[in-house]
Length: 580
Image (cartoon, rainbow, N blue to C red; front, top):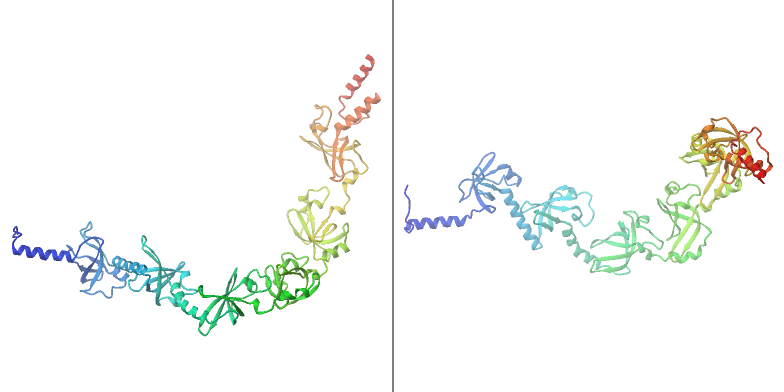
């Protein structure tokens, strides 16, 4: 091999010139997009020739299929690739046609975004929250949110898939390489000029015929107006819908209905037309003087909601029949189960508010108040029959006689002595009961009844008794708290507290009693209103001791009383007299 050492020779200089020109033509640098010529194609790979590289790069055929250019590739075709590595760990050159295409496409998108240019694309598929759009020129994939597909709601976008159309770039994420586009901006922009032309045809005071209800919100109703020049949307504000008070347009309108409108405002800058429905007719509230509070009138049901019915006293003069004013006895009633649109019903006017332009009516006032009828037929204290229709954890509800009224029977009013919870378990739905009317609240629509009030009150046994009276009781049981006793001839059980068993602490032991003993006790407290009785053996002992000391004689007559201190007190008084 001949080695050239003399670089000044013409041959060396010519070689150096050719080498430099070749290297300057192909700048070999990782991360750059370079051109490569296809030299060979197999079933799996495509071989490229790139001047300046020591070996031929290889591209997988599947990669070319992903970017949809596999059918265009032939031997001799020049393609762009990204040089990822001049030499990997195996000594091979690593290139990517897919990444090169993505970078080229991204650069074009950035340029269009900076110049505010529209791009050509087509929707390829639907995805969560929107659709995927493919850039026609580069094949780059972009996202179009559902809100940016059209200027009006579209339930189905199948007819747009695969159709080439214009899109506006609205967001580019340089870091993630993501792009967001809008079809809505293009559609709206095209319509803007047409909309201005259509609006210029209107003037304030014009009447628009057969406008179609398109949609509504909390502040008004949107109508679609069709003219020879095209179609526009217009708004009828909530306050311009009706002379009567309207909470929401859906109380008055249904989608697709046709209504006449009056143009009341035109804004050419915002391209908006304001309309009114109520101004097409005279103000019916001017006739309100023809109606009086408390009088009965025929009204027409025009709309039914969950909370009541909208009715008309006359054309345009609307009023609300609230669900609470439909029936005396049925609470939370569904108006749809009682009335139909178009029904003529009797109602009484209960309120007229001229400032708020509001009229309130009642249907139930046209009927007899069943609570008044019940009070007249069965005044408080009367007996009435009822059928149990509901039971909860603390009360029973009875349908009273032939009235459509539920009587409230609390568990405390079932029995004088029984446990309320246990008493409640004795009854079931469908049982008939005779009860006493305890209370009727007509305004609150409530009736309270009682069962025990028809029974003899065991507490009446104490009517001829008073505090400090002695009575004989029978011991039922004993515990650490005291003695459970029952007065002879009574059904009431009561407690004699441990501290009230005897004057002497040593004698005040509940364990001294096993049950069945007959003992005397004094009434310490008696409250008929609260039905409360307190007994005390200690009090009786004190009363008897005081009496015995006063009379210097023993009051004991075989009674079972713990008077262990009585003799000591008597002896003490006797010694005191002798010393005197």
